[in-house]
Length: 356
Image 1 (spheres, rainbow, N blue to C red):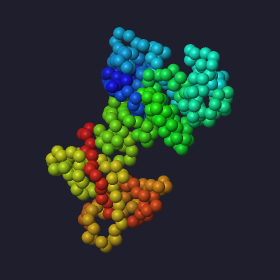
Image 2: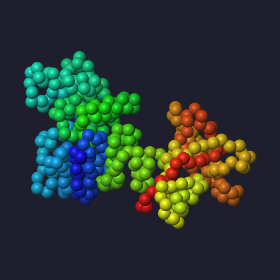
Image 3: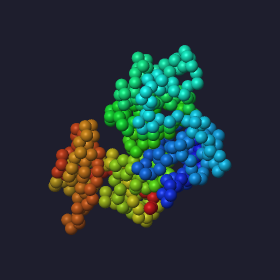
Image 4: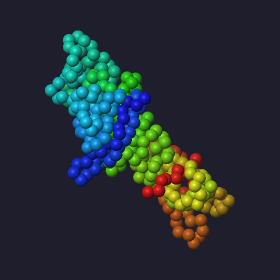
């Protein structure tokens, strides 16, 4: 069952097309992440779902109720949709308890108990109830904003880059906590972000936008492994993209002969491999019996448990020029040093990208 249905949404600001025929289904209880570069239309789409913007054409429905179509538009305050902006937007003149309880129709002891319950659900100590927003850390402010949004028992929760102002370590902790909290509450969630790793980690459905269009949507692993095109591949992470000739399920390319997930014959195409699909083995300079593609390590980017290496493919014959440079991900502790001669092999299938 789908909680949210978007049908052919269009929005223009003068000559600029902010949304171009966007359609998307959001399953009930799921975590959908809308990701894309700046100006791709993701925030416009989120604000349209919230009711802060209205489409020029198209239809939007929530739990079977039409919120927007050609005949009427339901205003934001009647949609029962929670919204957490990037900065939390807490009221500076209200305490934590007053912020969380803002908008609750109940009063007295019942309201006090509801606020205490919400604070506990987002891991805020009860002693913080009397604090002011400026006395809280960034992570605590975001949890107050989330509790305030949950107070209305929303049918849908919208998160607009809520972790972007937090430190790297805190972002990961907050992301996991929020994901677990919303899943336990059974709240369908849509997160907008430009952070690829955050999107892949948080989502069980990923939607990639570019130039106002929905380029591709699906399970995060599927989009990471089988992106629609080169731009999507590179946006979702490091990628090795190269031309190849496809024949009988194999790609013939600079890396040699690699199995592919497309069986079209005699077809020139672009193939993609993720850096972790490339493996390196040390070889001696005079070892001519080793099969595979020879390369030389020309740069190392050490980041602790992993190391991203830049390797330069060596010519297969003396009269051939030096080959292309590739990124390879290796163990940080055992990565070969710069200048090493290595053999490059591949794991799994290369993905054949769609033609532009």
